[in-house]
Length: 453
Image (cartoon, rainbow, N blue to C red):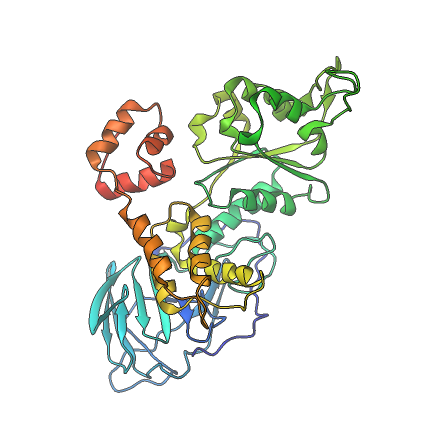
């Protein structure tokens, strides 16, 4: 349907600044699905004036200019070719932005779908989907027109970068900028984010982009270490300690010498165990069990938690001077289709034929409220893959899973205030309310207008 650019097309920028976005946010249409599985997924069109969405570049009568799409990356915005292909009329939609809304009128042959519902015209807002039925699907979002310059290695548009991170949204580029900044730093890093947001992926990225990349990345989930063995796992032991014949073990800190130690779920360690890490973070100093002499390891610690920074011992938290908050999937919906395409390829690598998600499935995935982020998205795609067909469809099993997730009751404002009053922090309140993280609680409070100290 849409004429593709060469798959090898890349954009580059070499300025060492974080990609935080530097221009005023405006409404954009993001192309998230095309009938031919187009490599143009992720391209955007700014909605700053009246425009016509349609095939080619020609204008009819008094129609406004054709909507122009581009590939937007930090420091480089590359205009792309006009929309082409069967099924798309030369005059498909007339678009008129009105503040935070977009007026859409269908004047073409194909049906207009607004959030999956057939309409002739509509008023759309950020977070809505708009589709030319059977031809293309767009996501409407507010984002900066220009992204601030950042340093990154070239990679194919819409595909995983060298670290495996997928996304062309402003949030994805902000995260890449912060990861790059942390990689160039020598400070210890704390990654904050809900379950499934990609903390381990980001830890690997920081290591791979840093000067420590030639040396080991040692990873361990702190929650899986038995309480009685924490010091033995972290620091190791000398030979014949605690019993004769016991082999010497370097411990995680010794194994990560000159490299990076990734400690996931660090907040699950007790305060006394957290305190044992302070000298390691200060000077790399530690003591193996049974040894009278202190040792030194040149190690950088990247830690992660989904419980929030307030759950760490205050003096341990102070050692993590670099802190990065990972955006949940609900805050980067424009990337969901790109991530889904990649996951579908991985599912097919298990032996089945490669199948891409259909328009209907993609539309529902974009509007679903995720609690487990990418893990939940993968679960839905695997359910769809159980049914045969040329594409991954919105099957009854997927519908049932989406319905179950939607039926989980949302806490009322009164319940939120009561949980906050009973809990020592927002993370514990979120858990009591059945929410996946404090970030989900903050979003819900904002939507309901709940204010609490």
